[in-house]
View (spheres, rainbow, N blue to C red):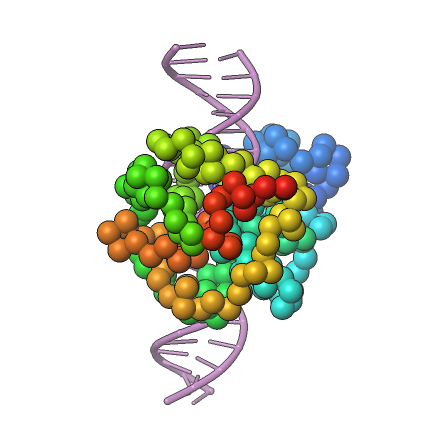
Length: 225
DNA sequence: AAGTAGATCAACCGCCTAACC
DNA sequence: CGGTTAGGCGGTTGATCTACT
């Protein structure tokens, strides 16, 4: 059976909604088989998650949402699903699109292509044990945070704590505990350089970094979460 | 009115990870 | 323990819309 691509029709949406009403979400590959939809499981999941879910908010982003996304992006980088998880009613796709089309411009971020962060070389700061106030962690979007190589014991504790708390806060309710208010959301000059950069032209203030808000060590920053 | 460029955003692609066998 | 599969993620594409000439 040939798979259909492109935009979903109203009929397809209805079939998918009806199926989920009866069977619940999940097991997406079964959807096509059981409904006759010529869509792959991934496509069904995406359509549901990004559009058909009843709690998905449509329409313009508010100032408050913009502000929240900017702050979260400064903290988490391009981890859209984590950011979206903190913005009620918004999907990762919405947040990502909104960032790329509106917020990055608003903040004066240029998007540079073909630049991949080299995590191992970017971590030399930690290996040398010289994480100073205001310096930041470089983390690839695909980096398994808990597997970062850390040599120095003190830094290991600090980074491990930070990583654990980022993950925890993203799924829990503790993010408010972060001192986000101390960060200026309109720090456009800090956003001037693009997302992931080679360590050669490392800019510790790039938005994809997890920045230490007040210059204290990471374990202090995340304490009490 | 027609053509073009830029902006927007839904959907796809490829990769990664966890679960299962 | 290795292979397979499904779900999830971020990056990218391309159809459509809008503004401008």
